[in-house]
Structures are given as C-alpha cells and as structure tokens.
Amino acid sequence: MARDAADNTSMKIIARIHSDFPTKFGIPRQSGIVSALESRIVFEPEYRNPDALRGIEGFSHIWLIWQFSEAVRDDWSPTVRPPRLGGNTRMGVFATRSPFRPNPIGLSSVRLERVAKHAELGTVLYVSGADLMDRTPIYDIKPYVPYADCHPEAEGGFSAAVSARRLQVEFPERWLSMIPEEKRQALTGVLACDPRPSYQSDPRRVYGFSFAGFEVRFTVEEDLLTVCQVERL
Image (cartoon, rainbow, N blue to C red; front, side, top):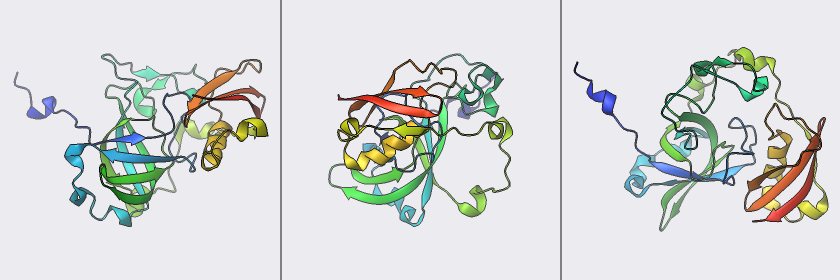
C-alpha cells in the first residue's frame, strides 16, 4: 500500500530556548504561571533571516511549539498519570499535557518582552513565563491572537477540580543574598508553585534543583517551603 508523502515529513528545529533550568525538576508545570521567569530564543543559523520575524514586535504574546526532548521514546501509552491528580489516577493521554505522547510535542504561550538584534546570533526573542528546559528545541513560533485564542468561557475539565497550590516561601537572607537580585523574584515564584511531585509529602525530605547556576535545596511542611541551602554550581 502506497504511503502518503506526508507520512515521512520530518520536523525542523528552527530555534532553541535558553532558560535558567538545566534539568526538568523545578520547571513550572504550565507556561505563564511564573511571569518573572525570563528566557531568550536563539534561532538556528538557517533561520536567522530577519524577514522571518517581520511584524512580530506588534504582538504581546506568542505560541511556542517545541519538543519534549527529555521524553522522546519509541512506544506510547493511551493513558498517563497527571501530576495534578497525585500521580495515581490515569487519564487519556490526549486529555492531558503529559510529555509522554506519541509525538513529544509541547505548546506554550509566553509573553514577548522584546526583540533584539545581535551581531553573532541574529535576531533574538526575549520572552517571559516559559516552562521550558534550557536548550529545548523549538519547531515553530506563532503569534497569539486574542480574538481567536482567548476563550474566557472555556472549561478546565478534571484540572479545574484541582486548585493550583501556592506555598509560603521562607528564604533566609544568608541564602537569598547568594542569588542575583534580578533572579530572586523568579526563583521565589518557582518555589511557591511547589516543584515537588504531587505524590511526595515527607516534611523531612530535602529536595533540590538547579536554577541559574545555583543548586537550591528546600523542605516543605504543610504549606511552608523553607530554603535550607544554596550552592553555586
């Protein structure tokens, strides 16, 4: 049986994002949750033609279509365990935003802060609110169009029944002072979103993740997160 030519179409990486997260742990579970997080999008040499971005500065937000580069696999499962449901309840993969999909593709809406030209890198996009790991491959960029993309009446399915948990963050000055001032608000916002897996709640356990060149360790007891150590990587 003849195969359609589209069956063999491959995706091209047009850019990579540069963020403060060298690993997956700690990244906000959705885009826009921590607006203070700043990233930059650097295009691959083949796509650094400035004409390709003509007019983009007129949009406040853009869509990023990207690859779950740490979740590429040959097989797939029709059901997954969404973290927001505690990691125990299974839902259909197409009813979730799980990274474990037949095609490891992610979709994020981010704020376009500015467009800048660099002598070596060409045109660079600076964005805020991204939920992507450092150097994540980007397949495409599209403008966010409010009249078509905004749906205030939309229903949130099972995710609406689980409120987004926000923790109180205790960040002792001895550790906070180690973090560059321009990164503090973003890091505090990430911690407030509770980076832990939903099924882990041991108040004695010390968690840690890398952020902006630092290893940040913390504990959580009930609704209080306490930073207990910061180390420069």
